[in-house]
Length: 227
Image (tube, rainbow, N blue to C red; front, side, top):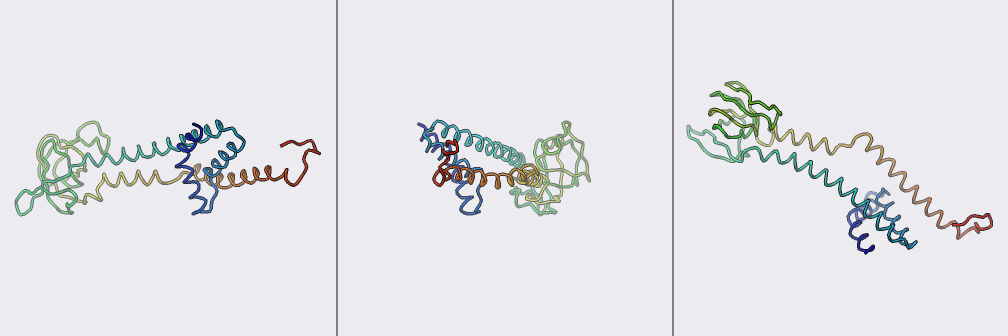
């Protein structure tokens, strides 16, 4: 059972530690944990080895789960935007995918419909629920000349909007990109910890290796030292 727990709990982060050593030529905390597990096994304390692997694996898993959940939550904002838009072309309404919208396209938003991309109102007036984007709890009154944002909900009346941004570069997409970029950037504390880990881990491994090899060259028993 200990071997099973070690294999199951350590497979992912142990693989990452080996790849970090072979590809980046760096000894990280994962490699330190691998050798700590091997050392515990050599000493016959498999319960300690299994506990070490499971606890470290759980910590890595929680970190990855939190990151993925946050990213998926941000990404789910895209689901608030409609998949199609009612565009006016040659004086006729045409339903097109929002990804095909171009700057300058004219589209109509009926009451209860979400706005597909950024634009300026050129006809009509209504109240718009902007809470998905701005967090504003109350509907905002909008009229000709006002800007509207994607994923916001049209309330009272039909309006005609002129697109000012394509879907891939609208406000909602930019918010998602900014949040994901902020997540990928490391803070000063995290960068310091990584630099410290890259120095700390090899030092600990070297110290452990010296303690293992030292009795092979010296009779420490004469000095009353037992290893």
